[in-house]
Amino acid sequence: MSANHYDVIIIGSGAGGGTLALKLAPSGKRILILERGGYLPREKQNWDTTEVFVQNRYVSKDTWHDKDDKPFQPGSHYFVGGATKMYGAALFRLRKEDFTAHRTADGVTPDWPISYDGLEPYYTQAEKLYNVHGQRGEDPTDPPASAPYPFPPVSHEPRIQELTNSLKRAGYHPSFAPTGILLNEADAPNSKCLRCDTCDGFPCLVHAKADAEVIAVRPALKYPNVTLLTNACVQKLETSASGNEVTKIIVERDGQREAISGDLVIVSCGAANSARLLLMSSSEKHPRGLANGSDMVGRNYMFHNAIALVALSRRENPTVFQKTLTVNDFYLRAPDYEFPLGNLQMIGKSKGPMFREDAPKFAPGWTLDQMARHAVDFWLMGEDLPLPQNRVTLNSKNEIQLHYEFTNQEPINRLRKQLQSMLEHLDLHPHLIPNNLYLGKHIPIAGVGHQSGTCRFGTDPKTSVLDVNCKAHELDNLYVVDTSFFPSIGAVNPSLTAIANALRVGDHLLQCLK
Ligand SMILES: Cc1cc2nc3c(=O)[nH]c(=O)nc-3n(C[C@H](O)[C@H](O)[C@H](O)COP(=O)(O)OP(=O)(O)OC[C@H]3O[C@@H](n4cnc5c(N)ncnc54)[C@H](O)[C@@H]3O)c2cc1C
Ligand code: SF4
Image (cartoon, rainbow, N blue to C red; front, side):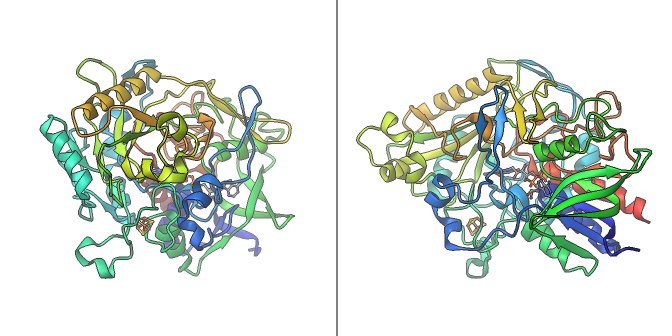
């Protein structure tokens, strides 16, 4: 066998690809991970707000274009571990109802080809693997689970505990946000996680966040049969003459192109970049792009309707690690509205430099740091619908063009009003400040953190790209395991579902590799 041939090649080392590598590692098969980025440098700037949020130190230099061809810089992160290096580690399961068609304000979502019960064992494995802290039974929308969370919930600090108590007194059901960090509150001196104020949206300097590099890629590399090539950007997948299998992977490293081959090829570049790679891999047998006979590759792009809101409290909010609380009372409906509104959760505690744009408008006379000291920060998330016209295409330079029209806006606006009216009854200033610097971007679609859905899985090759095992309908050895496979996005953060699905697909691949 040639040195450039592997049993399995995984392209992309984030939540999907990194997790799959670890799942397959014990098989002893030769596994190659190709990652376009390098290791995220461990440096003091990891925890520097200005460097991370204002200078965009860890954001890719990519240029994407909107539907009118206007260029923008997407909030994408190309490192070993993918976007999980920067994520907030809120590791929610989708709700059971998300797996079946349901009505929303703007239309009906599609059925998933698997049920919640089919994915449940993998959610349990995913929570164990990614060290999820949480508590079942408080959130009325919690789906059934076969095991408790592996770790106790991350405790609320006093200000958030007060908020929780007030919400409970007002009849709501606040609960602990499920969180993947390596925190041991019972033995703080020996805990890897320091419980600091630079977690959500920052890389973890001490490698205590349960990201895909720490949890999956590094442990996978302990196996002698697993190899990682960094700064290895895959440019094209070529097929056999029949077009039925991928036979060559063209990789660019240090300006040089080389060809590598694998029996099984797993694409996991993130939803937009996976679509890009397949579209760039068109050939005589696949004229519209690889695996794209259905013309579905790139379509149904979703990224959530999300609002980061800051409530200015009359009192200072000294909370350090704020992302411990979530409220799902409006996830399925509201008392005065029959459609789902979405999820409320906290985000990382804001800091002065993040307010550079909003402060003068909203709090004249206040310093940025003063605003941050009084801020209580929320993240509101609603479902956007998978629409065929919301899609990734490529321009003549093979840059991503993101055609996206917002959908389902009424529910997220109602959720915002709902939160505002709840806060009016609590000790928080009623006027909320939109914190549009949270992802460091000015153009809403540039906040691509939750991108999903460009290669949906399904049973019908006419309406989906992947089959139920996430294998491309049209190819025998090509799989996709990032968030591209989502047929709909629900209204909770996507990573745990991508991780659980990678473990599920991993079980299938282990059978194929026997
Ligand atoms: C600031 C921020 C906060 C977030 N917070 C949360 C949260 O709290 N909870 C949650 O669930 N989710 C959160 N997310 C989203 C989460 O990080 C993603 O949903 C998740 O990482 C997606 O996994 P993936 O495998 O699809 O893609 P990624 O993790 O992005 O991995 C894709 C990988 O492919 C590589 N790649 C791309 N193209 C190529 C190529 N051509 N060749 C080789 N390699 C390539 C990339 O460099 C990357 O490493 C957050 C995201 C951001 C940006
Ligand atoms: S809170 Fe813990 S996991 Fe998060 S950045 Fe700080 S030390 Fe790392």
